[in-house]
Length: 461
Image 1 (cartoon, helix red, strand yellow):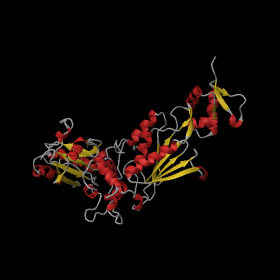
Image 2 (cartoon, rainbow, N blue to C red):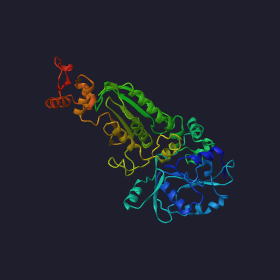
Image 3 (cartoon, rainbow, N blue to C red):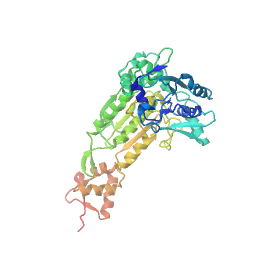
Image 4 (cartoon, helix red, strand yellow):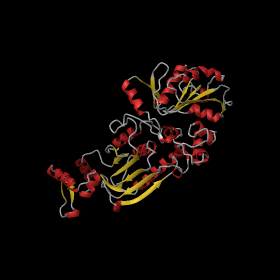
């Protein structure tokens, strides 16, 4: 039995229930625990604490710690889980916080499984956000079975990597401090099944998450390339390449460093908007969610970096590996699949997790683009990767955008209109000008021709 501090017990009592975390009253029947454990195993794994009351039942935080008086009082729960078939991969610990109570809490740590699991009553549950959802549709159960990969590269062992690289790193110390854990790095990693117990050999997931310099120990490329092209062309030439940055670090830090670099580059790009020449702006949440998705769900068995390409009129984020499981371009907003469930789960443990809204990331990106009146991101499956393009193209028609521009500016040139509308063809923009001219909305500015040619709004008398 593990003794924990008052602060650690308080953190468990305060922690919000989520895709990876649940807490249950000690009076929970064994069948109720089966439901939660099966749901975790059928999704991305998780941890449930039995003996911690729900917020609604007990408003005083530390009084939620209401375990049982003896370890043997949990025997029925353990027996119930142990008889499930197929066997659920779980580990049990008993916790006592003497500063709080002599009662004992049971922690059940569940790994994602390669099988579809059922409760003893033959019901299938899957974890979605903070709920355990029962699946009754046979097609959804079949789809769940298809999504189960036999292996995942994040569980591969890195025999040449000393365990202290992850167990004593600044990254793991920062994480343990962030979650208020008194465990040392080695104990924590063993508890989370991120090291092999026999010899402490690190798994790929542990190196990605907690090595301060994962690239030095990973057998595959695992950094992020941020590339700036000064063009709108689909196939940029060498002359268009302005800057290339390689961003490295543990997963949590890597995400933030990449976002900071993207923000820095965007601050130096100016485009024509309806209010004049302004720094290009995208909804930060859309960039965040798409970059996080690319890093945590990429295929780390492929030796390539995530690429973030910043053009004058768009951002392209390319993640190595095709869409996993049964996920397709058509259903990606409705389905979810974690290629790297250990990475996803560990990042979700931070107080400010980068993957806060499990399964909602791309939905958020699409919603924010709509709120900003920009066109939706475009998702494409490549030969060996997935590309998400974030266009800086307004939802308004080209005609509407040009007329709105002329509400705030005296005239507009073809190049300005291309920035404004996202249309790349000079001739196509000319056709928009001609349609507005024929409708009696605009006219050429007298005395300007060639590259200086411009149009202005016709003022009604």
